[in-house]
Length: 288
View: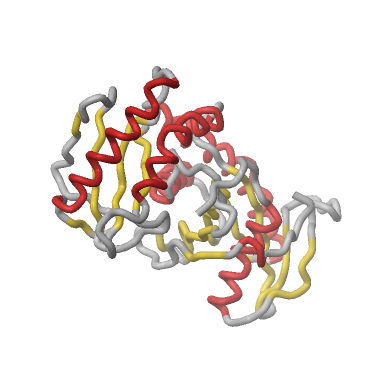
């Protein structure tokens, strides 16, 4: 898995979601067009028909907070080599996730990095076989936070009964409430910007409306956090789209499509999770 540069991929993200819908409906799209390019009064990103029904789609990129990229660069410098060293050396069949503070690298000096990496790798290799196993995405409680000698921040290690979408070993970053408040604000703004245009297509054309959220953040974003923020942002609104998806595009060799909501089902109720897509096969459906 190779992490890509930070950018959004509107046209290909829309194609990824449309391919999933085509598979679900067992019908190919037709009459694909760009109302925004055609200067439509409600300039959504894409419209097409599937099985004779009009679909209206909007895309937006989401990120948890400003300066996210700089933080990711620092964290990847510390934790990227740790992930590489541990990826093939842990018990097979299961996956492991190391939780660390998102600001773990904030006060580190370059000379400390190698020592910290060695200490974490040694501790994970020793601890991993002793851990109790939980279903993927759930955690054995109470969670045990550990201070590793020579490491200036606490960590916790978790073991799951199946391989997750990020492979055998990954690092997850724990964030404070201020980040979640910023995420909620960003997604609320997306709702304000996008819902009205989609609702207009539903009202005037009878279209089935689809919002595509794209995230390219390997550190601070996961589907559950986005789903929770979306649920809060949609509360009380009457113009919500029929379907909402998140497309994860932080890798250059595989993307994931997850349905957050459709047919009255929320993210936690639906089985359309972590659908793998090869980005090299996707079509750039818009100019962005």
